[in-house]
Image (cartoon, rainbow, N blue to C red; front, side):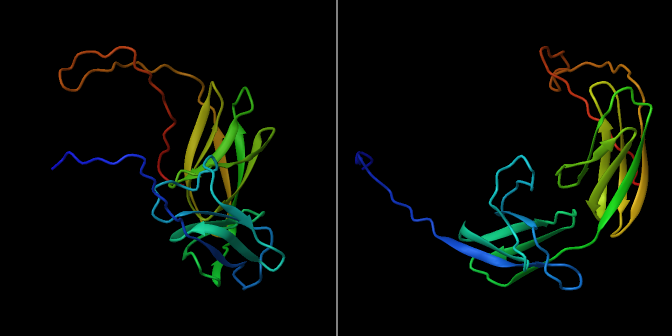
Length: 212
């Protein structure tokens, strides 16, 4: 009748957790030690961002890994070796023989031109996960999995960005050149009536062109 109510109701939910284990090998089937593996629910929209806390483990000397206690379900796995080799996989909790095969990386040896200060260099692919480069003087070094990447060198005052497509085992030369500073003027309006909108924060990002 709509008048019934309950007080002090306590619900108990049992969250089943299981193991997920396997091993990581190279293209020749040899075990790879010290590989970092991160796991996220396969249905989650989040990426493997380094800024998001996720379950993680490392392989032992025989390439074996074990996630001891994951909520039951299907998980996406990202494996990354100390040399930068990567692979992704999916597996259900309870699996014990998951095999993840790492693929050779590509190397970017870069040149920095015209920068007044030492910029930060980083690369990110479509899935929006950043990998930092090593900057020494006017050069930089990146070790990346094969695929399409945007490589950026910038500080608070200047920057450059390029898009590259890398193949397994490739060594690529990339030059990033400072273009100095400029001004960008515009205005923000309400799309319904065209009237100006005040107190809006505007941010800019470098845009990459076609892939090299």
